[in-house]
Amino acid sequence: MKPKNPNHQAEQAVLGAAMLDAATVPALAALVDAGSFDEPRHGLIWDAIAAQHVTGEPTAATAVALRLDAEGDLKKIGGGPYLYDLVAAAPAAASGEYYAGKVADAAKRRAIKVAAAQINQLGDKTGEPVAAVLARSRAFLDSIEGAGEEWPAPVPLTEARALPVFPAACLPDWLGAMVDAVAEATQTPTDLAGSIALAALSTAAQGRVHVQAGPDWIEPCNLFTCCALPPGNRKSSVFAAMVRPILEAEAELAEAARPRIIEAITEAEIAKRAAEQALAVASKNPGDPDAANGAKSAAMEADAVRIPLQPKLVADDITPEAAKSLLAEQDGRLAILSAEGGIFATIAGRYSGVPDLDVFLKGHAGDMLRVIRKSAPAEYVAAPALTLGLAVQPEVLREAARMPGFEDRGLMARFLFTLPTSRVGFRNPSPAAVPGAVKATYGRKVAGLVHTMHHRSEATVLELTAEARARVVALEAEREPRLGPGGEWEPILNWANKWTGAVVRIAGLLHMARYPTSGHAAPVEADTIDAATILGYYFADHALGVRSYMGVGAEVGPAAELLDWLTRHGKPGLSVRDMYRGVRGRRSLGTAAAVRDAASRLVDHGYLRERPRAARKGGRPASPRYDLHPDMGVAGDHA
Image (cartoon, rainbow, N blue to C red; front, side, top):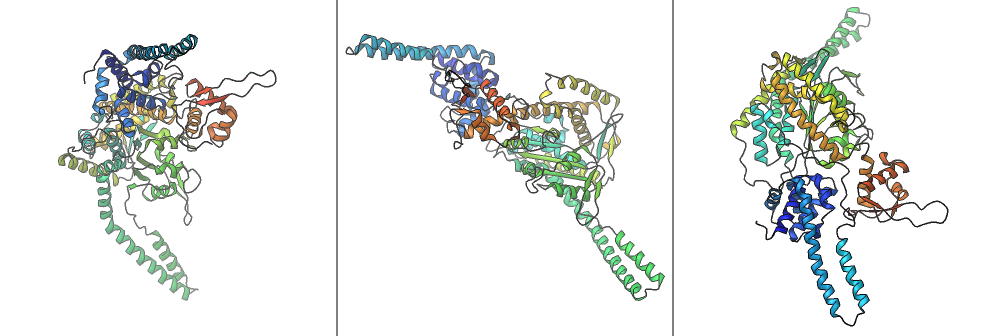
């Protein structure tokens, strides 16, 4: 819609700039607020942008539309398309401050007109003293001069990053086609289907694919993936489409194993009966050494009969103890695939009361795992290969980051996270279904890989071509400067230390996806490393985004925890002592000094404001008291 006047055009440019780049919002907020916009709907949009920015969430058009829709204001502003019109109206993100100045000036001119009318009315009231009229007139003008400067919008504790879309083109054609088709059919971000596709490949490989990445470096090719999306994003539907061939192949393996299982059960029963009969004979003839030896031999033969277990490739939300047992039973290979985030709480000790991370840490690395059983001797899984493929609500990540051991023992560093933008509110109500040929090819390829790898008793170690090995060495060289002080990946150091290994793991899976039946006999090529590298950089960007979202950095984590408490329980005029009492028990805020430092950071970022202290003639100075930014509305009762 064409703006009615140049001022409205400037308003559009300001809003568009804020949605183009969240980093411009603090400078814009210093110049304008919702009341600065002449067009009422522009004020509503600015409020939504500011609210997103305050909580560290994206200010992109899609995110703003979701907030407006949740607040019942999306239709009032002209719907989602109008937001994209605003983005198009901004010449560049950097120009937002220029146009914000024009909007602020126009707002003041409108306010001056209003003040002039009020002063004119005061002048007509001849009964009021002239001094009083002048004083009230000055107050009107002073209020205009100070408008919008009382308390600027806070600067987010963590950086809101624009995250890339999953690069499905890096996958083999048959797999990329399925990812794109499922994303379209379910109207979900490609990241969700892409994340599950990699977990599906890892499941199908069953820990039987390793890569010789260096002279003394063998990398197992099992992955932990986790996609975070809000409710209503059809995570279960995408899981069903991507995992169905694996479950069908599992059923086929189980059916094929049935005759062997029945045969073994029969042999075991026969051997047991024979042992019982031999024991009875020996018992009746205690002095007969042949009878005694026959009983011993029969007992040993009965004990030697092994009944094969039904193949099980996939489990859902199971306990760590159950995961250990299944790994031992299934020859060290298992996948946990779930569209829920309950596994994190289970790992943290929801049922046992004690965090149990060993099976997940060792299952990712392939380190020997000891399985203790109550009614049998301990078992050792020499090289466990555990796959995790999860789709959770974003808030689950924040909860997980606070769980004991998840960060400091490196569990979170093992995940390839994705934090895509939800499509809810912009979905096509009548999308195309997944083409039959695409679905059939995907099912055939995945099932073929499952059957090929299931019957291997040991892992295939893939070699790299000379060019591919040079690529891996170059990746290590590229990564190292990013890890140093001030480096791009310093905030995710634990995760980034495993980055090259993750790229190699992905490359091994892509290689097997290209050559499901013959890949074990061919080296991994350089272009496969290149494709895996693109995916690696994609996951690195999302790891930074997730880390920012979780607010787990040592420098901002305590402040984020304190802000979380304040937004739910805070009240005006709180002291550090009040805050310390309220957050007692939280590890990152375990001392008054930690709370004081967190409060100081919140002051620096504009979330808290220290009240002026009353002057004292003697004694200790008054303790500082703080007010919370008015935009950070209290959600719960005061504590």
